[in-house]
Length: 385
Image 1: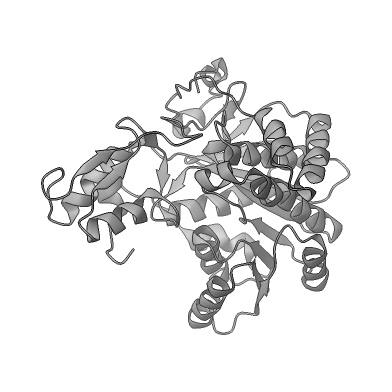
Image 2: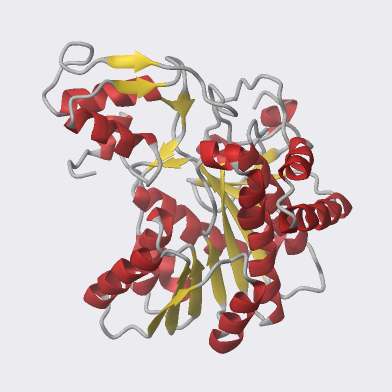
């Protein structure tokens, strides 16, 4: 995205005040490992962690060029930081174990995932292998080598998922929440759920920017499609604050943290604002073309699923969700997915993921995290989300 777009102007709201330095104090002197470190969120998180004076930082990713770029940035920002960039895949249990054994990370941020809905819809076994089995592998290594905490980055697409990607993230959430409640494990599993990150790779913002720069029609799939958005700083702050709260509050075990992102934003409004910000006129200089919903795509997303309740935390911007977890079902699903993925049996993988997909319509409730933090949001439990 060569042209810079102001997130506040495009999203129609002010960026929330966040203090990343204060939120990163828990990382001072810690050994930290980040999977998926070369991606948009992973890279932003790596920079924030590096600024928090950790004892060491390991950036783990299978993206060679992305790691090369990140290493250069970290070298410029924190030249004295003890850092290591590691080429590896979370699907590779032996490689993960080797790195964990050598580095002994105390804090693990598990960002690595296949996130593009359309790509995972067409390649479900790859999505399951990375998003589900890769999460299990990272968790196994963290527990074996005594990490204090693992933070899973999840998505609102895991709420009543309508697609393969959302289903894989829902299973990953449930796996980590189940392990967080394991009394025999010393490793906390903290789950963080948020929406789209403004400008992240594969999102609509760089796509629209590409189309506008070339005076191509801007394409949206439906005039009423809306999504939750947060800025890069807001996303990083949520991850750091969730870690801080989760580690310090044992009562949060088995829960899931989510953030106040304001109301959902119409994708059509984003398209119009981006066009106008370049001094152009929507549907005059740049056409806006409605295509159609892609396979697995929803009109709107939600932050809480039916049966989940919102509870207060000490933060005005972060709430804690709770819901039932069936550990036996998770174990059976993992076993089945591992066998099917090993054989690249797309039919079997689809069948198992469909068990986690709701095909009924979604009409999400607008959730105000500040209100949820004054009292338990019992209305959410009604299933409106």
